[in-house]
Each structure stands twice: as structure tokens, then as C-alpha cells.
Image (tube, rainbow, N blue to C red; front, top):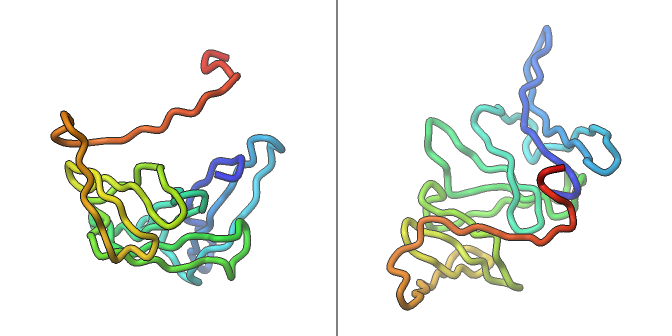
Length: 148
């Protein structure tokens, strides 16, 4: 995401404990802190990831992924965090990494689902000869060898 790797970490101080997103820029080789969507987040209850081209923070507590998450629409800007809620529990939903304009391709249990961007309407997709889908991967061409 944004040329870097991201971690959601707990920062333990003498008087208090807080969480922070740390970004390591692979091109510039520098580290920076990114603002969180909420003033108080316990890193053990959230997961940092990507949704489309946005940084995403998802609530994950007691082994259950909740059906709301936060996306950072403008990278590095605290005010750009936007709360998104979907009607299907996120614990059984996985973003495929594919989207177009206002629709996202999701994997729900063992099938493909097309979801509009506000997360309220879903349409099942079926592919002849493919009875179930467990996982979807993304392939990106690169001139960089993985062996280097």
C-alpha cells in the first residue's frame, strides 16, 4: 500500500498504552507514523490491511471479524478516515482484490459475490464448471525477480 509496509502496533509507555500505525516506505527506506481513525484503538482488537487502493483498519475481537471497518481515503490524512459497514458479517467475507467503479468482487463462504460500493446490495455470480470458490489471488507482472 502506497509503496510501503504497514503494521498496527501497541506503544507501551510508563503512564499509558496507545496504538499506532507504522509505515515503512520501501522506496525511500524511511519510517513514519500514520494517524488512527479513532483516538483509542487496542492493536490486538484490529487488523491493518488494504481495501481497494486504501489503507484499511478492521475490528477483529475475540476471534470474530466485525462487519464494519475504516478506510483512509487520502493517505496520511486523519480526517479522511471513513467508516464503512456491510450487511454480510466480515468473518465469512473476503475481498478478492478486484473492483471496478462502484462494485467489488468478494468471496463469501464458497461463492463469488458482486457488491455495490455502499455494501448493501449483493449479487451472486456463478461460473460454469466452477462449483465453489475458496480463494482468489492477484497476479501482478514485474521485471523484478523474486530470487533477488
